[in-house]
Image (cartoon, rainbow, N blue to C red; front, side, top):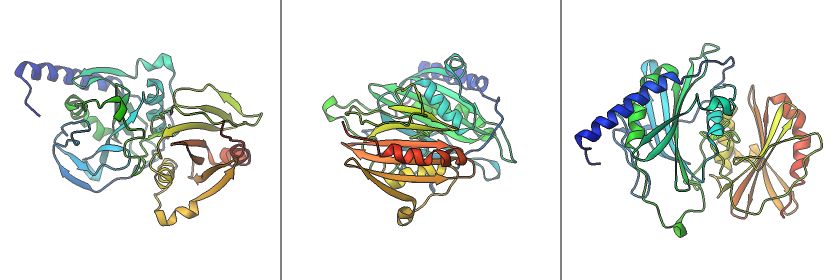
Length: 375
């Protein structure tokens, strides 16, 4: 990457310095509960500047960020090591579309830190705008509480929308370590360069990396995406991209309370102390194993291998549709989900909540899946 001219360097330094100072003011401290799902880590590779292939975005990794092999939905992945063996994870992911609205993105990451969701009125205090070479980034700095002998966790997150695509850059790790990386994170955003836009006719029809696997950056929901994920954000820990395909039909039980649909969800219901979310993604979204492991991570369970997958899924064939059904329970959360590939997209029918609430809703949820029909 060519060196910037002197005056440009001064301007960039001023922007980055202002951003790093601003991040300190947006840190969130007002929460009472704590549980952070552990994200999968790859073996660190060589450190130093890293750039994606010509077709993808480009960036320069700050000193001390160890490059990891990109996988699943990640275009880039880094590990930042701290004192006492601590580390933070940095990911770069991309989706077609808008990636959901700003409030959904903030609440997805708040969910990953076990923070309560905020409403539109509080959104302006949580999100900064940062105008850099690649465009206008929305940036957040969120910190969860320390509890149960575990250190507080913190997220520096940013997203950038451009021409029907959205990029998410996220650092998550111990609050103290992440706090030392605010300027480095700002430098990374400043180095970001978008790829040249391909002709519309050649645009990919599936999510980046969908042939390899998912990521628990999604929602859970999938917020959930997500996380990406709730976490919740997801895909919970990731923002959900709806697909332009004919919608399916279903009949929800009479005692399920419908919630407003959004850009992230085709439908949503409150079911006792649990929730049902219906989302759809282009492509195969990484396949069954990647999604099972993402959800297991969200409820605090370790990953499984392809050889073990058969013991964790079941099938429901109904109305000419084939669901793969997953049921994963951790100590404080449980996820039941029906995955349905259909006409080039993947539908997710997902029940989440405390284990006891999901158990009570399970019979109705399985019956609900059998009402789903093609138009």
